[in-house]
Every structure is written in C-alpha cells, then in structure tokens.
Amino acid sequence: TPDSHVPRDHRLIRLTGVHPFNVEPPLNDLFENGFLTPPELFFVRNHGPVPQICEQDVANWDFSIEGLVERPMMVSLKQLISEFEQITIPATLVCAGNRRKEQNQVRKSNGFSWGPSGLSTALFTGVLMSQVLQRARPTRRAKFVCMEGCDKLPNGSYGTSIRLSLAMDPAKGVMLAHMMNGEQLTLDHGLPLRVVVPGQIGGRSVKWLRRLILTDTPSENWYHIFDNRVLPTSVSPEEASNNHSWWKDERYVIKDLNVNSAIARPAHNEKVSAKETDTYVAKGYAYAGGGRRVSRVEVSLDKGRTWRLADIDYPEDLYRDADDYIIYNSRLDMGWRDTCFCWCFWSIDIPIVDLKNASDIVVRAMDEAMNLQPKDMYWSVLGMMNNPWFRVVIHAEG
Ligand code: MTE
Image (cartoon, rainbow, N blue to C red; front, side, top):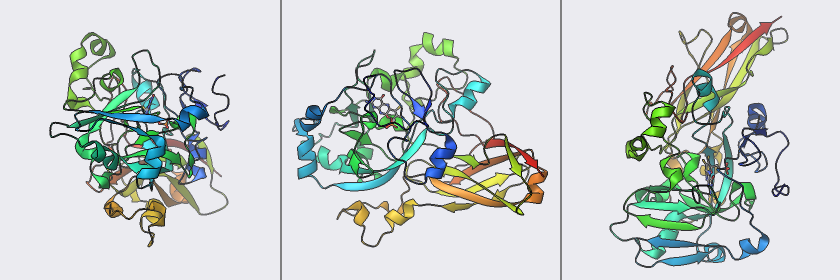
C-alpha cells in the first residue's frame, strides 16, 4: 500500500476499511504502555487517504496566514523552527467519537464504533499559535481561526475552526507542532506540521496544515459543519440528512472535551482470580476538557448504589512542576500551573470479599468544575462525546 512505510504497531485495531485509515490500540496495551503513547501505537483518525508527502515536500513546507489580518503572509516550516520560540507540552488528543461503540449498540449512529481507546498522549513540540498569528496582525473583526489541511477528500480538504480568543491565549497551549515525543511527526499524525488544541476534541487539531484563515464567522468547511457536533437526541439520522438547518446551528458544535473515564483492569468479562491475594487492584484512565483537572474518580460494585473513592495519579504534574521548566523549554509564563491537558490514571484496592459478590464494576469521574459523568447515555446522531459511567462485567473465581 502507499502507506506501507508509515510506522504502525501491529496491535492497532482497524475500525474502518483500508482508506481512510482509522485505528485504536487495544485498551490494555494503551494503558500499560503508560503516560506517553509512541506514535506507532497512537490512535489515528483520518477522513480520507493519508496525503503523500515526501522529504522534499517537508523541506519546502509552508502555510498561509490569510483573511482578516493586516499582513497576510506565508510562513515556512524552516522559519517556524528558526524564528519562533519552541515549546514542548504534553497533551492528550481524544477523538470526539471515543466510546461510540456503546452508543451504536443502543441505536446505530452515523459513525464507526470506537472502543474506549480513541485517545493518546504525546509531548508536542512547536510554536504557540498566538505567536505566529501576532506576526500577521489580526484585525479587530477577526473572531475565528479556520484551519485547513492538505488531504484530498470528497468534500475538499479537511478544515475546521476555533475561536481566535482561544488561539491567542497562551495559557490554552494552542500550538503548531512539528514534533511528537522528540521526533519529527509521522505521516499518520500530520507530518510535517499540525495544529494541537489541548483540552478540545481531537477534530480541531488539524493535520498536514496548509492554511490559517482569520474570519468573523465559523469555518464553512464541509467537515466543520457535518462533523463533530452533538445534535439534540430527538434528531434521527433521517431527519439530520433531510434538514440541513440542524447542522448550521452553532450551539451544537463541540468545543471542550467532556469529563470521561474507563476501566482498563479488569477487562470486560474478565475472570478475576480470588485466590492469591486479599485485594484486587482495579485501574483505568480519566480525563476532562478545557484544561480542567479530574478531581475525583469513584468506583461502584453495586451498580451505583454506593461508591468508593479511587486514587488519582497525574503524571502531567511531573512535567509542569519541574523547577527548571526544561521540558517546556520556554521563558514565557504561560500560566500552565493550573491547567491539565492530559489524561490521568486512577486505581483502587478492592477487598476480594467485596469483589466476590459483584457482577460488574462501574467507574465515574468528576472534574474541578464538578461536572460529573452521567448515569445515562446521551445518544445523538453522530454518536459523539459518549461519557456515561463505564462498566465492565466480571466473573470472580476461586
Ligand atoms: N486533520 C486532517 N487534515 N484530516 C483529518 O481527517 N482528523 C481530525 C484531526 N485532524 C483529521 C485532521 C480528527 S477527527 C482527529 S480525532 C484527529 O485529527 C486525530 O489525530 P491523530 O490521527 O493524530 O490521532
């Protein structure tokens, strides 16, 4: 295949046909791998074939800044690297379709079945988008940044927009990244340049970046309008395809991620041996959106009647709190001390006697704004932002 040179771990699970290439790692492998995911195990979400980009294209890569700016310009990748301050931040990208399979099991949505591994974390190196945009001097009328990749899709290139105020706020970490975990981006993940919008759904982090267009209205790109939205639950697939006004309503655009969590151990339907020790360690991940911190994770063995508090580990803190800030390689004070851009890990010791009486385990997380994962699913036509309590069935033995 044309993409055969792209590094891809053999454990990745295919979610669609050959093109577009859409994969997630098995949850246990993603989780056991730890905080940072290597690019070859990182989930991939493409809307079409991966563009063919050769070494020479990379060497000559540039992108435009156009629209409502005083000084429209082209910026080369070389300039981006040599003329702007380079920063490195850890960020978790999450596809808005993460956990969609559970929605599809209730009622088929217009999307393929992501398990709970539509997320991955990397150290992204590049330049704050605000620094780049400042050079072009946005005009007072500019309110949105439209971003476009170079993939050739049935409805044009992939594109979307974010608010200019978000892009211009250094504390939000919106960046143009050319490296992932200290190495050049791989083709699957946007070689040679992508946007990273921490805290928002992965769909805003445009890969293979070619254009930044400042506008006073949101992007009119097909993929911005007909993707990454949560329409009201009453809108059926038929109604959504017959009546386009649903898609033009900006209230239904997804921005920040919502609070979510999953259980990695035990696996669904696992036989849990009760013989050897007297406690069982259950564990998993959680995340929240908009830079908010997950402030509690709770586990229930009796279908939500009673809850026990899990421990939370935030590996991201080690990067942020490093005295010398070396990892961020930046003299700018970006106010990141209060901000969480990454997943965290939870774990809980469960006495075996308690586990023996349970038929399932459920988990829910709450963030610092007290947003709590709901008990019930909010089904919508694209099957996005699915975040009810996560449940695994267990069989205690011995
Ligand atoms: N950028 C382009 N150019 N084309 C795409 O299809 N998919 C988006 C986003 N950026 C996409 C894109 C979506 S929906 C997601 S979730 C993320 O890329 C996935 O990033 P990854 O493939 O590096 O994990």
